[in-house]
Image (cartoon, rainbow, N blue to C red):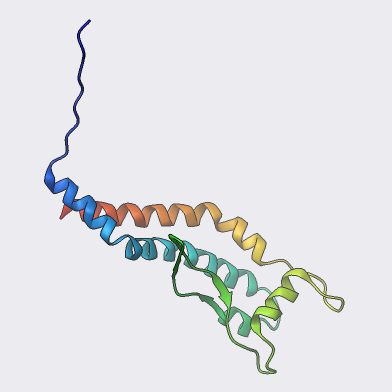
Length: 138
Protein backbone atom coordinates (compact mmCIF):
# COMPACT_ATOMS: atom_id res chain seq x y z
CA UNK A 1 0.00 0.00 0.00
CA UNK A 2 1.24 3.41 -0.91
CA UNK A 3 1.35 6.33 1.44
CA UNK A 4 -1.57 8.70 0.97
CA UNK A 5 -1.15 12.34 1.57
CA UNK A 6 -3.80 14.90 2.28
CA UNK A 7 -2.80 18.56 2.15
CA UNK A 8 -4.69 21.56 3.39
CA UNK A 9 -3.45 24.98 2.52
CA UNK A 10 -4.51 28.50 3.33
CA UNK A 11 -3.58 31.48 1.30
CA UNK A 12 -1.60 34.31 2.84
CA UNK A 13 -4.66 36.59 2.85
CA UNK A 14 -6.55 34.33 5.25
CA UNK A 15 -3.49 33.97 7.44
CA UNK A 16 -3.17 37.77 7.62
CA UNK A 17 -6.85 38.14 8.49
CA UNK A 18 -6.61 35.56 11.25
CA UNK A 19 -3.48 37.30 12.51
CA UNK A 20 -5.43 40.55 12.60
CA UNK A 21 -8.10 38.90 14.71
CA UNK A 22 -5.48 37.60 17.12
CA UNK A 23 -3.78 40.98 17.36
CA UNK A 24 -7.09 42.62 18.26
CA UNK A 25 -8.35 39.87 20.55
CA UNK A 26 -8.75 42.09 23.65
CA UNK A 27 -10.84 44.61 21.71
CA UNK A 28 -12.87 41.84 20.11
CA UNK A 29 -13.54 40.16 23.45
CA UNK A 30 -14.65 43.47 24.95
CA UNK A 31 -17.07 44.03 22.10
CA UNK A 32 -18.33 40.47 22.51
CA UNK A 33 -18.96 40.66 26.27
CA UNK A 34 -20.95 43.90 26.32
CA UNK A 35 -24.15 42.54 24.71
CA UNK A 36 -24.35 39.73 27.26
CA UNK A 37 -23.65 42.02 30.20
CA UNK A 38 -26.16 44.53 28.82
CA UNK A 39 -28.89 41.88 28.65
CA UNK A 40 -28.25 40.98 32.30
CA UNK A 41 -28.24 44.63 33.40
CA UNK A 42 -31.53 45.23 31.59
CA UNK A 43 -33.14 42.15 33.14
CA UNK A 44 -32.04 43.17 36.65
CA UNK A 45 -33.48 46.66 36.13
CA UNK A 46 -36.73 45.15 34.84
CA UNK A 47 -37.04 42.92 37.89
CA UNK A 48 -36.34 45.84 40.23
CA UNK A 49 -39.06 47.94 38.62
CA UNK A 50 -41.70 45.86 40.40
CA UNK A 51 -40.34 46.66 43.85
CA UNK A 52 -41.23 49.74 45.86
CA UNK A 53 -38.43 52.16 46.71
CA UNK A 54 -35.94 50.62 44.31
CA UNK A 55 -35.81 53.29 41.60
CA UNK A 56 -32.44 54.52 42.78
CA UNK A 57 -31.20 50.96 43.08
CA UNK A 58 -32.24 50.21 39.50
CA UNK A 59 -30.50 53.39 38.36
CA UNK A 60 -27.30 52.22 40.05
CA UNK A 61 -27.01 49.05 37.91
CA UNK A 62 -23.74 49.47 36.01
CA UNK A 63 -21.54 47.39 33.75
CA UNK A 64 -17.96 47.52 35.01
CA UNK A 65 -15.21 48.44 32.58
CA UNK A 66 -13.62 45.38 31.02
CA UNK A 67 -10.57 43.95 32.74
CA UNK A 68 -7.91 41.58 31.50
CA UNK A 69 -6.38 39.27 34.08
CA UNK A 70 -4.40 36.09 33.55
CA UNK A 71 -5.41 35.73 29.92
CA UNK A 72 -9.10 36.21 30.70
CA UNK A 73 -11.25 39.20 29.85
CA UNK A 74 -14.12 39.86 32.22
CA UNK A 75 -16.67 42.36 33.37
CA UNK A 76 -19.44 42.46 35.94
CA UNK A 77 -22.83 43.98 36.49
CA UNK A 78 -22.75 45.85 39.80
CA UNK A 79 -24.76 48.24 41.94
CA UNK A 80 -22.66 51.41 42.02
CA UNK A 81 -22.79 54.30 44.42
CA UNK A 82 -24.75 55.08 47.55
CA UNK A 83 -28.33 55.96 48.42
CA UNK A 84 -29.40 59.32 49.90
CA UNK A 85 -28.53 58.02 53.40
CA UNK A 86 -25.01 56.96 52.44
CA UNK A 87 -25.82 53.23 52.30
CA UNK A 88 -23.96 51.42 49.50
CA UNK A 89 -26.32 50.26 46.75
CA UNK A 90 -24.47 46.93 46.68
CA UNK A 91 -25.50 46.34 50.33
CA UNK A 92 -29.10 47.28 49.58
CA UNK A 93 -29.14 44.85 46.64
CA UNK A 94 -27.66 42.05 48.76
CA UNK A 95 -30.25 42.57 51.50
CA UNK A 96 -33.09 42.65 48.98
CA UNK A 97 -31.74 39.50 47.28
CA UNK A 98 -30.93 37.46 50.39
CA UNK A 99 -32.98 39.10 53.12
CA UNK A 100 -31.99 40.08 56.62
CA UNK A 101 -33.30 39.70 60.15
CA UNK A 102 -35.61 42.65 59.41
CA UNK A 103 -36.44 42.06 55.74
CA UNK A 104 -37.80 39.08 53.86
CA UNK A 105 -35.63 37.99 50.93
CA UNK A 106 -36.81 39.00 47.49
CA UNK A 107 -34.52 37.33 44.98
CA UNK A 108 -34.12 39.27 41.76
CA UNK A 109 -30.46 38.77 40.77
CA UNK A 110 -30.40 34.97 40.56
CA UNK A 111 -33.70 34.83 38.66
CA UNK A 112 -32.41 37.53 36.28
CA UNK A 113 -29.23 35.54 35.63
CA UNK A 114 -31.23 32.37 35.01
CA UNK A 115 -33.66 34.21 32.71
CA UNK A 116 -30.98 35.70 30.45
CA UNK A 117 -28.21 33.09 30.52
CA UNK A 118 -29.08 31.54 27.15
CA UNK A 119 -29.98 34.89 25.57
CA UNK A 120 -26.72 36.49 26.76
CA UNK A 121 -24.70 33.63 25.31
CA UNK A 122 -26.57 33.95 22.02
CA UNK A 123 -26.03 37.75 21.89
CA UNK A 124 -22.31 37.36 22.58
CA UNK A 125 -21.97 34.65 19.93
CA UNK A 126 -23.84 36.79 17.40
CA UNK A 127 -21.57 39.76 18.10
CA UNK A 128 -18.45 37.60 17.79
CA UNK A 129 -19.71 36.20 14.49
CA UNK A 130 -20.37 39.75 13.21
CA UNK A 131 -16.84 40.84 14.09
CA UNK A 132 -15.21 37.79 12.52
CA UNK A 133 -17.33 38.03 9.37
CA UNK A 134 -16.53 41.72 8.99
CA UNK A 135 -12.82 40.99 9.33
CA UNK A 136 -12.99 38.16 6.78
CA UNK A 137 -14.78 40.40 4.27
CA UNK A 138 -12.02 43.02 4.33
